[in-house]
Image 1: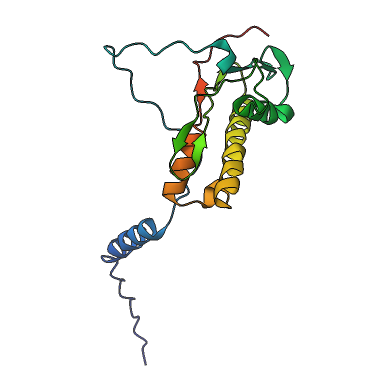
Image 2: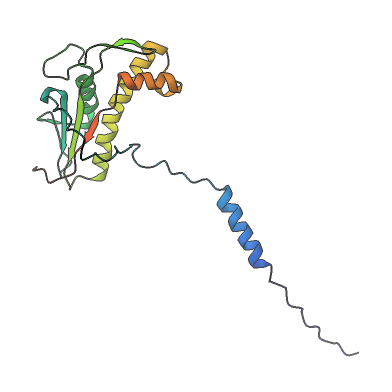
Length: 193
């Protein structure tokens, strides 16, 4: 009895590429990607060269925040810190005691769903040095945005009994009209330390 050697038949791999391609497409379609990183800011549209220049802003209506290359803050001409920035920005925008060195208010107007409200004329001006670290830049941005968020939350709670984030679109729009987020960011430059 002689044993015959059987040769293994080759596996047909022609459809393997098709299966791999289908799996790739399946994973691409079903996978979600988190793209919520960065700053939630909408850039203004380009200026029309023929449009009239906007009126100048009075100095009292500008809250100046400078960040130098050593990540040090200069808030309204005084050395500041991240811990106090939010409170100072809120005080500037709200100006609850109508101080002459803080932002002025527009004449009271009727805002739908809110009623008569005097909107602040205040603008927060942020300028950073080219050498400012990204972490400090983001931290300052976060504090300034948080100041406006807290002001909006307070108004929303007083008016609607809910935080701003929980309001429907119509009510949120009314709160935004009463508390517009006015943060102006100048192009980075070399600020002396």
